[in-house]
Figure (cartoon, rainbow, N blue to C red):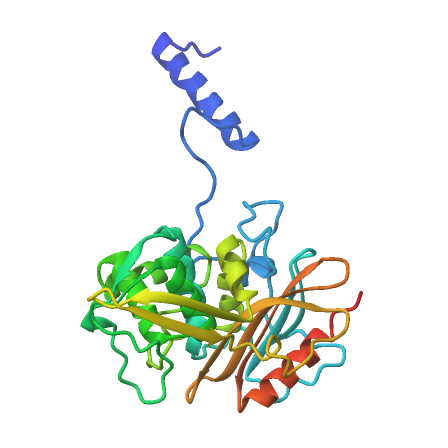
Length: 330
């Protein structure tokens, strides 16, 4: 028999205790043993389903729809869409997917992330002050025609951002929340990483074209899925129109009014009879084409997120979206 002194016995007992902890998964003191999420690792949502089993790892994507590649729809013709997808939020199922991991320009779908970062890092009654930095010079870009010194609340800015898709208001929000537009863009990219949107990179808060500003249809689902958890976001995207009064630097009242850019809410297109559109966000540039992401529900109240990107024109975009929504069967 081998004899063990007190010091050796102590080491043996500690070793046995740690072994039991590791085998059983029990916590040893305050040392964490959960495997951390890495934006570049195998636990990214798009990779989770095929590379990791639920039995052996923390389920980062347990509440998300996960898809590796294309999922053919039963009948929808999505030939004209650059990318498209339909996500069943209740059952966490991907009902349709086309090119969902292909990098594309998001246009004003970018403003969904702008809204998330703003809502999470400000109060609705915060007063925002415009500077010369908010100016948009791109021809044809939607703006609220703000001037340096103009004042409005965050609540007003969010409504104008999401309904009128005003690009100067995106810059207004960014500069006032983070102190600089560049600082806000960093916050946007950090938020995207925490959501697992690993194929997304933002270079601005509005979505006007930049070669290094991109996302994917799947990443936009992850971002939009986070946005619809926020009550104020849902309230705004459900509106048909918005009117408000803000003030210039001298205190003069400026009237602003706008209708939604969502053509379902304008009555120009109708969703399938079993579907209610709860709201969404449009995006259009020459580089991005025509894009639309929606939150909707069926007659049982089950929620869905649908997205179509890079269509040649608005009519094709909404026709493709209707085809996609017809894949929802009650």
